Length: 197
Length: 197
DNA sequence: TTGCACATGTAAAATGTTACATGATTAT
DNA sequence: ATAATCATGTAACATTTTACATGTGCAA
Image (cartoon, rainbow over all chains, first blue to last red; front, side):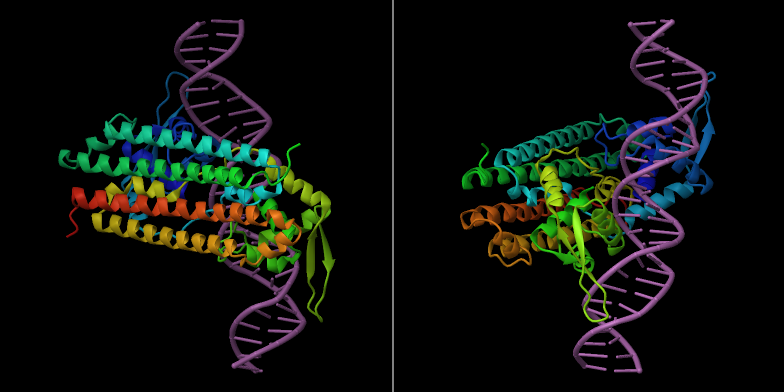
């Protein structure tokens, strides 16, 4: 269900083609929801059927393409979801699972796993912090479009709230990195559980 | 793939029936991987075929049941996975997605969503902290069985590492709760974005 | 005797990933 | 010309959730 609202939420800022949407959601942008284009194209079709978006054929030369725009019904659906309280999704964490068995393997392997994870989480935290800063400066690809339809008096509040979301993501990623680093410290202090040689 | 290793990892501590396993993984225990019994029974069948576990028929009266035990091949598979570095899984976070659109709805709704989330994360953090404490005291359902097959000199190191895993989970959940609380503060400071009346 | 815990499965649907497939446009 | 980017889809597979389905053992 969340993918649907990720799409509606992006289209609320501005109309896009399926291709633009799939780039936005392809994971490399560090945005909040990642999905493949193979999920997005069929979903857009279903959403058109449901009247949540309209697709306007907008060919450039021979290159066919469709630009999707949020309808009032789509916006209503989005607002209902955003205001609602939803049951928590699964929070299965593959790293935690691996970490709890790390005492079974040589200390050098365990340390490698932990360092790699910590490194990735630090990188994720940096990305999120950058995003928060860009948002606060009004430099993200969508924030200007979003603000255009809102009263100027609200602009500061809106950017502040959105920036807090990404700052929070950064804080969580940092907590995760510190977690792995705490395990590295524990590993070093107690000495190698298994001889490496 | 992770479910497979969650099962192997539990069976490494002690043999269990499918029912016991599915209770262990049913989410209410606050363990690291949750799954339904409808996933576990077929998986156990496949794992028997692959020689990772053996199932011993162990009927109690007329009540049929099968107890599964890790094989050497199963343990080897587990150790290989634990020592390896794996690509990060999806970290799509439905709360973050909802949070970034919270400026679109009345402040009272937004505040409710944030309070509910913060409350849940505090509860999750408490559970993880409790688990860490129980682990350190050797009181979790599996830690004693696990330690039985390990030299006494390693016991402290093993429990310390495992406790750190759950302490880390608690820290991450706390970071998430603080995230939501930071958004509540931002919401209050900038005033209601929408009039509630 | 009724309900709960034990015990094991299958089926259908939703969701997500990887691979396959095609063609147009633009920059080098 | 040729490679990268734009643009849109389908197919196969894996994973997860929800529902359906059955039967035993035990305690109130």
